Structure formats: structure tokens, C-alpha cells
Length: 133
Image (tube, rainbow, N blue to C red; front, side):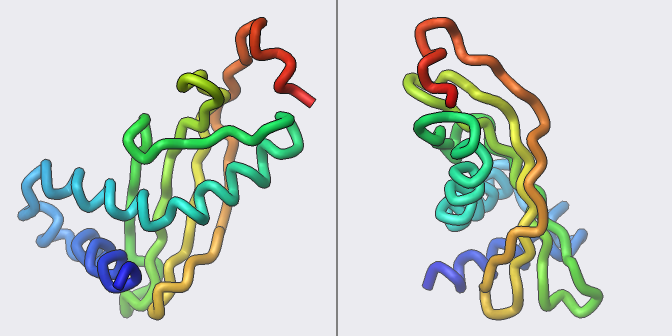
């Protein structure tokens, strides 16, 4: 069922005429659904990157600065490229940076990480310095 909802949201963004017809609040809703459906993959990538830097990997919240961009990755629209920008944080939403993760979503809903780019680094305040490795 989740794969169906994810595929439906992706399809909404694959047709330029359809995207322009979607009210802004519906587009935001679809982006929120996509971010939540990709949460396990997003968190796994965050854990992989920050596990080398911090004692406890940060988390992210789909509603906290997350941006979603979708586009067809093949001419016959059997796969889609989904780029997610997240702001991972520790504690009470203390940001550790900004990251861009690109996924490829296949015809059957399978998700593959294409790239992980650490865009911005935010240093932790003095009372959280113990979290660095």
C-alpha cells in the first residue's frame, strides 16, 4: 500500500501540466508523504554519514526544513529521481548540518541511494561537544 501511495505521489510530479494544476497545499502534502515514505532510507543514510562523526547519529523530521524534488529519471517514466534536502539534528533540534540525498525509485517501488552530499556543517554548541567522536 505504501509503495502505491509513493508511486502515486511521484506520478503527480512527473507530468509538468499536472504539477502546475496542483494547488500549492496539495503539492506540500505530497512532498510530506514522499518524505515520510522515504524515512527509513533517509535515516539510514544519515546514520551512515554521521556515524563516523558523532557518538549518536542525529535524526531528522520530515517537517523540519525538509525539501523534496522529484523528476522522471527515464524517458518512459519507469523510474524517478527524488532529491531530499534534510536538516539532521540532535537533542532539542540542534542542527548538525544540511544534507542532500538523491534516491532512484524504480518501477516496483524499490529505492536505491544515488548520492549523499553534505551541503553545510553546523558545529554543536559547547554543552554538546561530547557528542563528537
